[in-house]
Image 1 (tube, rainbow, N blue to C red):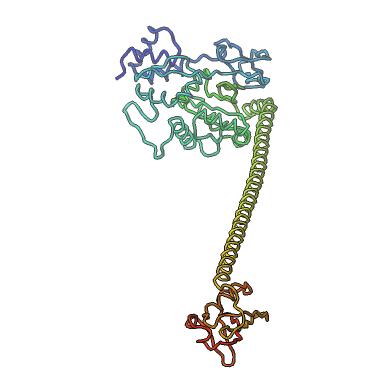
Image 2 (image 1 turned 180 degrees about the vertical axis):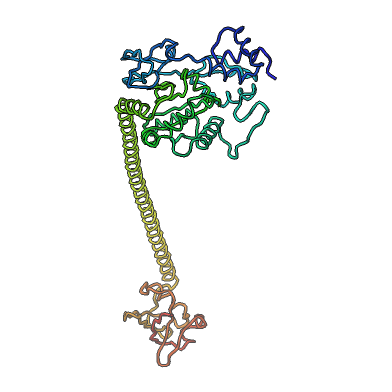
Length: 477
């Protein structure tokens, strides 16, 4: 349970009253019902334009209606025009001399939900925390004095839930022909208007005000006005009984209902208040004001749209340039990879060719060396065999004359002792070096006799080759 001091402090923060004794008296008069005290204070303590002086305000009469007011501490305006003395003056054009409303970031202190700092549009930035704080003191969304609450089927923010509830209630009471109020919080609606390059039409709904029903039925639900607003504005509405609607009424200093305003997003956490209209208006009067504001804001909206399109074009151009650069870079990298791969392939092929050349050269050198070694070995063998034959004997009865015919037709002849072996004849043939083959046989004709390995030990006489013999060299297959 929130104690008396906390309720007094909270009442001061919401209403802006600095006299704690006065706040205590107001709360006590309402039985310490904080919600009832705040609601009655904001609805009955409002000062009419005829009774309260205007600070930093400009308005021009266009026939019938109420006035436009602004706070000197929060709103700035240039090119002001004098206010007519007529009590029926309609809010005049601001001449695009917009009033800038600051958005201070309110600080929610402690679990008691006391608000420290300025009460302004900055409350939207802490809307979730503030909704929780209002719930602590009995002002939370969806809770009544008996603690009744409703749980939404879809999880949404408190501000969006309030907006949805307002739209549903407005349509239930006044029908579907109305401004298309967005079902989202004020800051989201402001951002939507900024993205769509439109102004934001704000309607603050006071259910208890005597002029509210007729204004909603005859003006807001007018076919012409509703169509104009839906075509040219983003619309947001809120009940001052809800958390965000109540905050809006304090931030915009709404002193008379029905209350409408036209705002647009500015920079540095500010919004530009282009026009506010308080009190009942006919559809024609409100339409005239909205048309004038729209006409005077058109250059700014067009400039904003062109700037956004230029930014998008620049972004798209940069993206295209980046894409082209990346494509060119990837192509260069691909060509470089291909060049390196080709170079590596050529280097590998060159290395392989060099390796094969060296292997072939080494093989040739090895073959030549082996051939030389073999030739040298054969020469040594021939020489040894020639030496083993000894001197050729002279003719005599114990000497055999041997004729050897080679495959190429060459003929060689030598004398041997009749006791010399067939091996001696083989040694003689080997010593001549006339054969390219190493495996051969000595053969005689008529009759054909092959003097193979089994007859090498026979003497010429024993082999029947004495006193003379004619032998053929026959290579073995």
